Structures are given as structure tokens and as C-alpha cells.
Length: 124
Image (cartoon, rainbow, N blue to C red; front, side, top):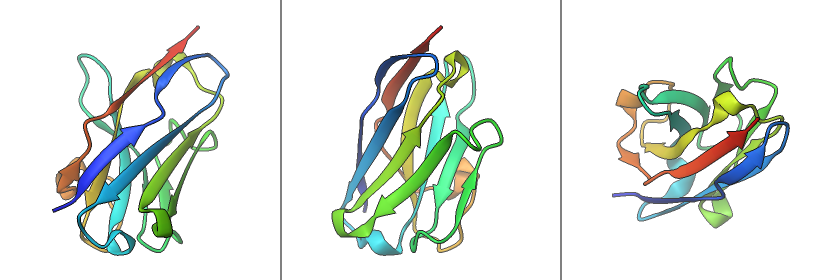
């Protein structure tokens, strides 16, 4: 069992930055692939970024590549999402998720554990 708690969401103007954090508990964090997803009203949950347990492998959605950075601190059981140059279309509830499989994946189906989400709103 893995318990995930996100924080760091809020309201920001277009062009601004936010850093999301997700703290995990309940299982050896250093062996878990971690991902960030987001969901806007009326849309399906979509992949944002993923990081392997070692931190050496990362993947990003095309829509955030070059603007967002995923990282992790295994000593703190925490994964981060640094979001820069935010756009109104980035507005969504952001979720972190844990995948106990070693292979990073972009599919929501692969993630067994999910946080409650944190709202990010970008005003124009």
C-alpha cells in the first residue's frame, strides 16, 4: 500500500511558476516509479510526466516539454513537479501516482496508487 499526498497547487498568472510536491508513505519509495497526471473539467485524465525510481529516466508530455521538470528525493520520499512558463491551458487538478513496476509508463492504467489531487489555476 502507498499513500500519496500532493501539495503546492494554487492560482498563478500566465507565465508564472509553481512547484508541486507529492509525499509518499507506506512502501519503499526508492523502488517506485512516480508520475504526474492532470485532469480538466470534462476531459480525461492525461499524462504529464514520469520519473523512474532511480531518477535517471524521465518522460514528458509534448505539451509540457521544456516547461515542466519532474524530480525526486528518495531520502524524503518526495517527488516534485516544477512548472514554469505556465499557460491557462495548464489549469487542471494535478495528481501524483505510484507504479510499483520498474518500467516508467505514460498510461494511467499502470498506476496502482493515486493522490487526492491539487488544483492549479493559471489566469490569463
